[in-house]
Amino acid sequence: MRALAIVAFVVSPALTSGAILAAQAVDRTDMPGRGMLRLTFEPSIVAWDAQFVGAMRLPLGLPLTGDTVGSAHIPVVARVEQDVRTAGGLPGFIASLGKGLLSVRQERRTTPISAELGLTDRLSVRLTVPIVRVATRAHLQLSSKGANLGLNPLLQGVANSSALYGSFFNQFDTSLARLDANIAGGGYGCPPSRQCGAQAFLDSARVVRGALYEAVHGVAQTGSPFMPLDSSDGGRAIAQVVSYLQTRDSAAFNVIGFRDPFLLAHDTLSVDFVAGAIIDSANGFGYRALPF
Image (tube, rainbow, N blue to C red):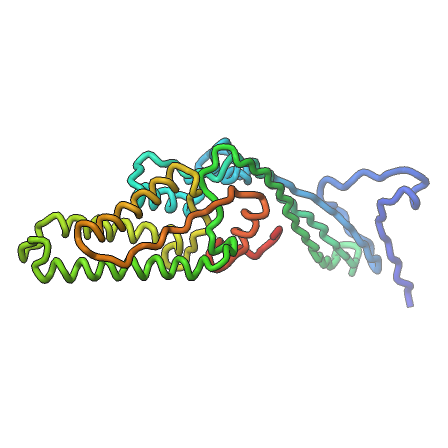
């Protein structure tokens, strides 16, 4: 019985008297002889830190990179920005998480291991098993310079935040329902057509209430990880509008019981806060893949 000869190509200085063999650039065209088994290893590494979008080369970390990290690339920030504009009466409000720099590098290492057996001098059988490993390296630097958004108190775990929001919206809804019932009963001199100041106030208050609720709880399955800071222009405007609605309710329309303040974010964002917002599934993005 003819002995089976095994030929292995090993690129190793220890086995080649210190010489380093060059990597094979193209597939071999020859084949092993009859009864010979050839093993080959052809590793390759592909790395990238950008992607082509709309014929443009954009960095992978672009959404969290810039002097103003905001609504241009993050949809939930764009929605909060619109909510603050509506609830606070600030049409020019520009939401910002601060100044950021996100470096992202993707890497894919492929190592095909091939075994080729010569059946005859002109015919061979080849089996290739690719071993693929991927890695993502990400590093975020975030500065509070120019920031006017912070972490949603619900996500940050502020004490009693859920109860505070629940009480605020319950009081708000109760006052709106009472005002609506008074208008329907002919109060405030409103005609049956409801074309009066009280109805206009009710309509505007409902719009504010909707925007504030979206800012806290998000829309449908999408949470709201960020809220305006209480020290920002947007936060102060919301506080003033809420105070006006509460005063107007009691003074002009004799609807009392709406007194709770609206809870806003207090602390500027840190890298840890942003990482928490990324992985949180209740109020954040719910992202659980690598590298988080």
